[in-house]
View (cartoon, rainbow, N blue to C red):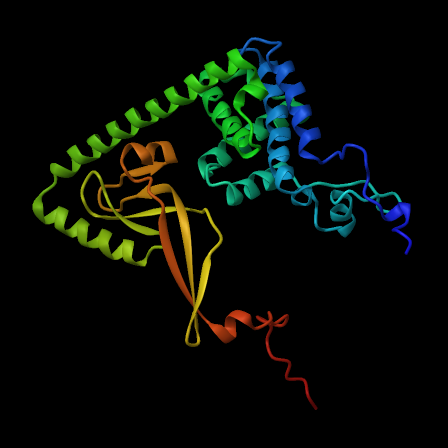
Length: 319
């Protein structure tokens, strides 16, 4: 029996989309970042370059195929370690915003809050590289650096490594202190907001509070998400978040029951108008517990193939 031809064999060299290669490049960018003071525009720009490579490394650790642009199957073939024979082939990976979206779906700790920061950080990088704007000249490092370190710590954990491997011992210690301080500040901020909304609520008349509480209860019952009790006014409110595990499915007669577990990311109360965003702030108010949602589907509809003509008007052109 003969083996596969050389053209069909995976490449033996370090793959351009391997997590090792991507992480090594992220380390190089971090070195360039620390070659400048934290308030220098180059510090911010190199941090953005490093963040993208670290995010891609985190996906590649699961599988380089998660980086492949699926519009051309050759990209997936390349991600598997083979050399596509298509003419003029240049491997194409997904956009960084798509990489962040996939990480948010895959990693429970990569919350929508951290995803949002990452996308905005990439937007600043794009402005710096492709326009005449100077986005990193106008922001103080204290406004973004703690969150940047928080994202890096989550991604390094997903790689099975410590933040020290990316930043170095001394810088990693400082980074962890900034992450802790950021969460403490978030807690202090949200508790002040909760207290302020509670004061306003208590000043309302009994009739108005009862009316608003009824409205909030109806709204929460109709709104997608998990019902929770508002820490300011005690009304029914809503938590929304992102799934953190594959759904569990069971068959009950002709009905498929699907249970999905979520990590909360946002809170909203219609009665007193309190809004909380971010897992750190939710944790400070005791609203950070995971929750479950149950969905039911008709078994025949669930497994039926998609109708390619769904949504089209009937063709009544018969003679």
